[in-house]
Length: 354
Ligand SMILES: [Zn+2]
Image (tube, rainbow, N blue to C red):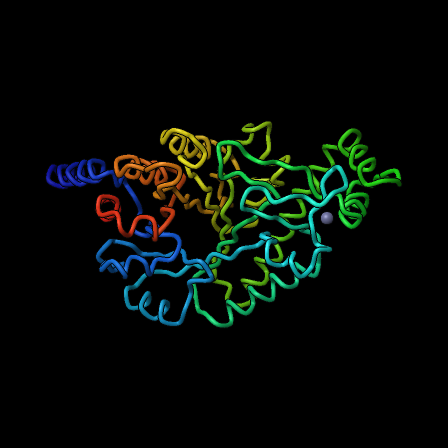
């Protein structure tokens, strides 16, 4: 390499590092999550912000949104809520998640989960997904609310033990080749947690992984090029007494073998963590075999720009975007379009970063 070329390389490298862009690939995903039309309402357009992707809630997806997004040359990924049972349970209380006491689980703050083995619910969700993909041409689908009944977007998580309905216990017996003694639900649940807990946790993980496998098959039946992503809780495995796996039922290595993209939700302020947690999470991820091998999915973290609780400063917003773009990330998106659209300082940060 000639001196001039070497100098140019180092000049460009320094410019990238100084601007916080690192050595990102040209196809690095620069997205915004939520209702990205909020950015248009404030006079921005996606191209001038440097964006190349939007992650839009299915409720905000309209033909007009798709048409203008195409003109502004961004990829469209649609968020699809999976195990949010609030509305379905009003019509189908039989799908209620049952606790170890044999009672219907109460809402976990604003979230109400569901029994994920209820086939009526599963059919309804997959029909809704089919209708969405029939009506709109998109580049991919991101599964959301993908966990057993719980609340993790808070410093004090709500982590109930579910679901001990007769169907779930029956399916677990088959999976684990165990006979759970008959009797009251609370007694049966106690027996499972005392004598068969490892198999019970494994079974719960497979229930979610099976949902992911079936959703992916459905998505690819429309177009094999469509990507399936999953938004998931960004706790470290040992956090909250291993609740990611034990309570939420998320077997991350297993989901990584199914999903095309994993989007850890690294909402630092909602979880009362320092911004450096986002960097630490990406560092940890970069050391996991399942996250870095040839069959690993892509990682596009979602970071917090939303002012709740308190205010996320534009300086912290810049940091979480930068940290969320660290290896093995190949994309990043802030939560959410509506929260940052009216904040000129954050919009300046976003544009500068993208
Ligand atoms: Zn159940």
